[in-house]
Length: 215
Ligand SMILES: N[C@@H](CCC(=O)N[C@@H](CS)C(=O)NCC(=O)O)C(=O)O
Image (cartoon, rainbow, N blue to C red; front, side, top):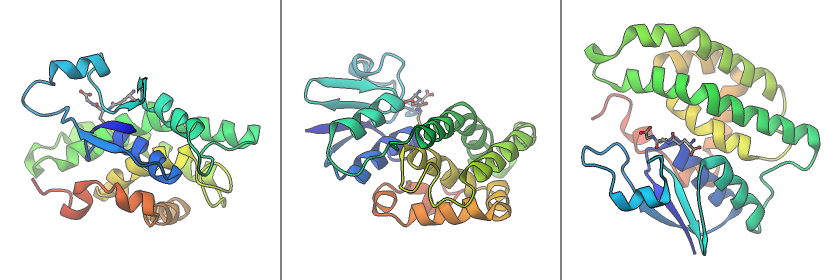
């Protein structure tokens, strides 16, 4: 029995859920709202001492940190491989994951998407403007690395796709992100293709249905 602890709105929770869905592994989803006004339940600190989501449990294997969980899911269960076997493609996958972790999540999600999600007069425009050149570099670079390949790291979907898609889905909801993904058409088309997969449909963010400025 696999249990994922996290939230439906969470980028990192979705990465783990995408990996499980792509592998065809059934899992129980235990909701933890890390941003709720009430304090994070004390018991959750036993699962994740840094109080982030997701956390993961399979039999006596308890994990936190998405990279460790996603690789465990790929290696512990049957189903299509989510890490390429060739050294070059695997290095590309790890490079893309590192770009997503180090630059994509803070800049595209926090500095731009989260700010644009606030009520119009509450968005920190300065923070958005400062992040935009960096965001452009991230999107240009992902587009260049993907090139004409079907997926981000080789001929099959991999953990690189599972990482980048949730971040770009949120970024594309903003006017700035929408424009950048039109400009980088190969990446916009890839995102459409990934979002049509059963794994992506099963794990959609609530905001994809409700729209950016719904509260
Ligand atoms: N390094 C962690 C990052 C996880 C993370 O940042 N999760 C976000 C939600 S998507 C979170 O829990 N944020 C709560 C906070 O920053 O207080 C991982 O790879 O799992």
